[in-house]
Image (tube, rainbow, N blue to C red; front, side, top):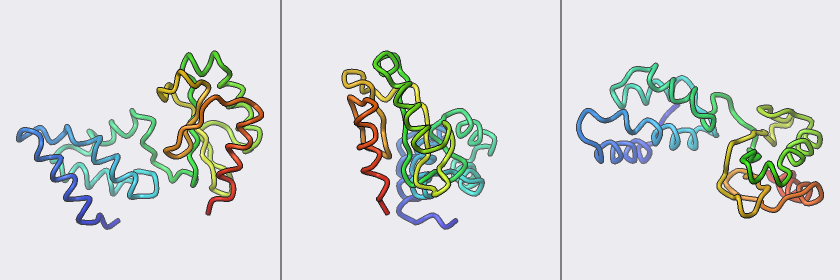
Length: 161
């Protein structure tokens, strides 16, 4: 994978914000920016690049990727659905929302639809407690969901190309 100069420049700038020898502090920033550039996932060449760029072990990068659930090592579907299961969302019906999505999409949590349009995830909290239950599709929040309106929300994304 070829990493564009503007991304390298952003990583270099972020490195410059830390004292010498503290480059490891940039791991998550570099992973975030490179995951977005690489169609939503981190592959071995990206991890190797970050390790070399930050002068740290490859294992240090792999540990971060494996620990945080928002880093993906496989290409996700075009639309990533994150269903909140935080206490507010759970008490207001997020488990029913999740069940409905699994049934409608014919996938389980962590899977991608055969047509590669949707990946379904369950996450701890998306900070939308006052409008629970809530989900995020890509970077857009959808709040105050129920069995009826979740289908119309999903239909907004079904025909995206």
